[in-house]
Length: 158
Ligand SMILES: [Ca+2]
Ligand SMILES: [Ca+2]
Image 1 (spheres, rainbow, N blue to C red):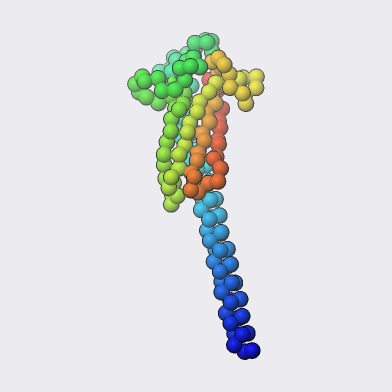
Image 2: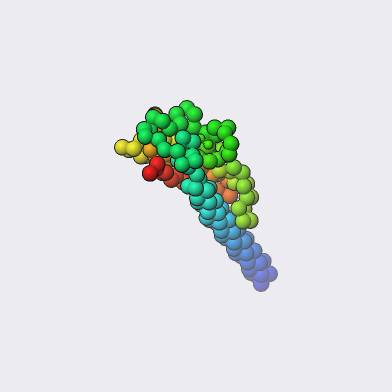
């Protein structure tokens, strides 16, 4: 009888320690997941800061001015314009894919999308140039994030 109790006690103990290990593992996964999200937001903010320093459009680089939205880069020409210096206006970043590690979390990928925003309903993309461009950054990390993270910022020409 004593021996059976002893074995039961060992079994119970190992079951408890097994579930404790799982809890620790779950907590570590959660810590890594939150860290991945925090790092991803940080990098997205950095990219947006960098973009915010650029001219609104190629047509407004070097202090040029436009008097009509129609003078801005056409919708179909958004993206790298191949002119030097590269990355001197907001939409030059359109279509860019950046792979990066952040802190102790490797394997992020950021995709940048730039579109003109409809000025009467800024959540919609416009089909012709306007004085507002929306930069959308989608960040994924298949190993550490269950979902992609999307951060947007609207930039206006004024
Ligand atoms: Ca440019
Ligand atoms: Ca451009």
